[in-house]
Length: 270
Image 1 (tube, rainbow, N blue to C red):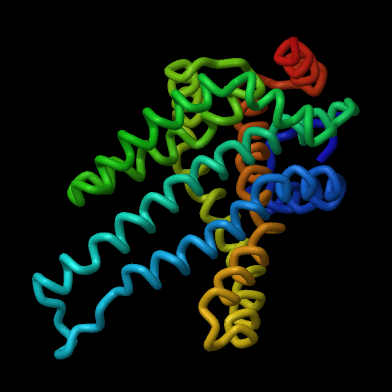
Image 2 (image 1 turned 60 degrees about the vertical axis):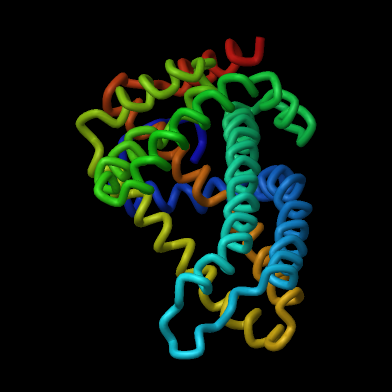
């Protein structure tokens, strides 16, 4: 999707834009993704393997875990939760760098891996603040079980916090409010599109994951490494889908034009 034209589109057409954009700027997108995701994928596989070796999850004798079994699982679960939390932060940073780079590519501006990540680092306070608030609210709601529906509501409502921090220079709370404003009146549209992009990603990933599992059967470390690394090229799909939906909502609600967007990118670069 080029910036010579911005139009609201049906979900399947918008999803097509995601893959057209990926193909058109494949080299830049993959380079930025690989920069963080490959080292982290390798590190994650090794850490999970070490955790499972150090604190293996016991298999109950009668199929029903006892209290002692559940206590024995705690270190493993806590360690894996910590690894997963760091992974979310890495994904957040990757998404910010990809957003910066892709919009600059579309605007015909020079893009490098270093520039994308250095710009992201200049926005670290706003990114960290918006991430911390959204993660805390959604996480607590999900942990309460009864609050899961509300957690899902906020998860969709705050879909665009990274994009508005990167492209509009919003602060932490401003990013939450701005994303909420964009989603207002289009919550189901955003949810539907994100689910559609997730289904597309799963359809691509599933055969690869099954083949990898067969190749690495019996070697948990190798399986973890291959599974993580094979997912790296799929990482950009979600950030690109969010960016496409951001365009869509701004065109529908604010009449966003290519010239205006390029001007905002230039302003954010100062």
